[in-house]
Length: 291
Image (cartoon, rainbow, N blue to C red; front, top):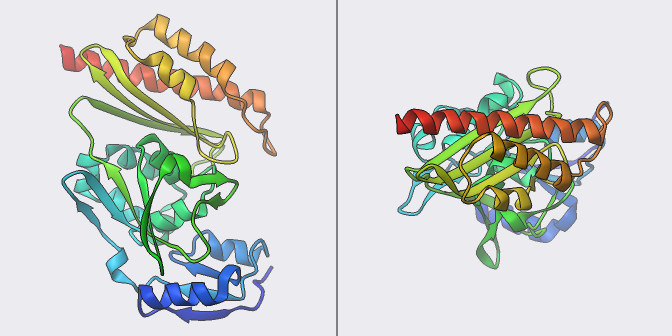
């Protein structure tokens, strides 16, 4: 299929892009890397009257470390994140997740901000943002605001962004010494959308879990945190008893949506498998540190 007709403007500044959004409203779409939007246009899943290309706004690219956060510009590509020493040090969860994103050509062109704004529940970056309790930075004619990841994803491909707002960056808390991160997903083939995936962030106090965040992709209409199971992990060592408790809790807490090839029951089982794998990895890491 071919895309519908639309007007195209390459924005010379963020102010121009915001002005165009304000004047065209829901008839306009922002074009960043285009890896999701162009496919949606060709399949007639999106039919905007105007595309506003912000790919030339280089001040929206790049990775910066501030005293409290790692700031990733909206136009930073997946490959930029993959190759960043700052990401490896301060947000290693992203480093673990990025090889799972599609294929090299897409990682070279696709952008971090575009993935977050697209809010695909089977995508890696929204899941990681939720696991890290990150924030979205949005700009509009009214000024800048920050939106917590927990509040940002509101439904299937929908977010808290207003029609006149542009996502300009995301900010992630800096990793601490006693943090552990893991990421795994299960897909039919590498590069396919995941059947289920899990981003895990644990913080330890000695041998026990002090804080836990389990963020899921591919299970619901948004990325999803399993809050009851997170609470269950607190104060527990990573041992067989804890693993069994987590599996039982997830079977009760999660209610995955079926897709074209997998039932909800299958996804629930795979979720427990992913959790067991990552907890086992975390256990081995902590044992090696203790030794």
